Image 1 (cartoon, helix red, strand yellow):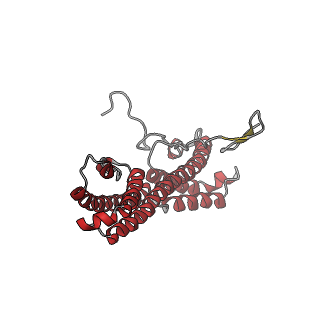
Image 2: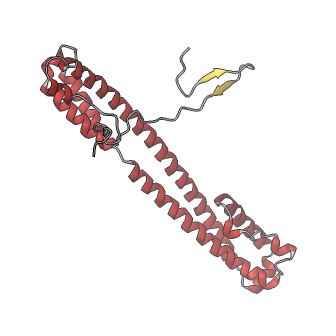
Length: 247
């Protein structure tokens, strides 16, 4: 039986197992830009030889349909754009993280004025590894600082700590949470776009290969120049590979 990923099939206990979708990969070695230019070039040759292609039911409607697919493909957002959006979301998140660390250090300055750094009450804030904490750890620390700071506020208010500062940390932590989610969404969206782009490019490339192979078979015994027009090299440059000794 052929399964379509993601696959669903019963385990021995009749529960369903979900198989991870196979990662999409390009069928062609050259760039997407080269796929577009090479594709349009081959479509122009097909249009020139439309009478010969009609015999094999590769009519003008199919030719123009492929051209439309290429145009839509070239209009897609590129990975460079998607990456920049991801970078910008990461920068916003990291900036908020630093603001949160600065605010927490401000609270700890007040704490240190009353409690020794080795005391249980000081260590209860859990900020000793603040600069090295991950995003998730920083969020937990921020909530803990607010919680413990509120608990000890009657004492620490005499050393400059205010409820306003603690509320500000809570607000920053909420904003930081939103920015973490935004970054994850940007990463996920980029992954989806990359996959969709690869699959769309593969569909176009596969169709081009069929048409160019047909073009070669049409002209192989009749016209060498036209035969060469339909050669499509699957190399990084999209051109013929260099031969030994070639400069």
